[in-house]
Amino acid sequence: MSTLEQLYAQAGKRRAEHQLPYAGAVSPAEAFELLQLDPRVKLIDVRTRAELDWVGRPVVGDGQYAHIEWTRYPGGVPNPEFLAQLSQVAPLDTPVLFLCRSAARSKLAAVAAAQAGYAQAYDLLEGFEGGKDGQGHRKTVEGWCFRGLPWIGA
Image 1 (cartoon, rainbow, N blue to C red):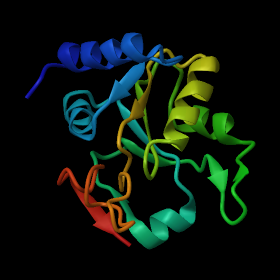
Image 2: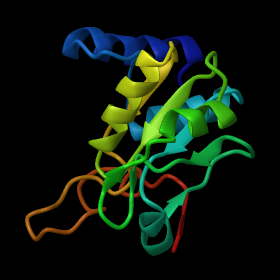
Image 3: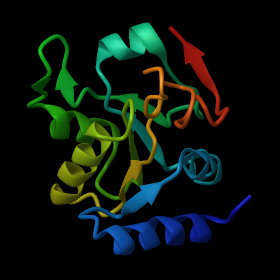
């Protein structure tokens, strides 16, 4: 188990290496450790409601999970209330970890949050389901589920 300082330092190192416009990036395992070590940390799931209903969601500590769509389903239109909804579940001084299916929308959410004043906005690498394998299936090569972290199915 790492310390909070080590985990945040690793995320910051990724920020510097990849010139990220937000606080940094964490692996699924690092995110899970952060959630266990710091009860202030919020995991913000930016997938659509349909994805939660059909695929499942992470299981984390009480009060540490929130679902705020980055884009709406159907149609994939941006959620114009994203930042307002975020402010309702996480004050600006809250460390926020953004999660999506495969770490694309979560990066966009982290950028928006950082621009809105969240100094501790992080992208959760690999996402919930991860990238596709050679047969086009997810949850088989990377991601929260593949790494064996707790989640509940649809």
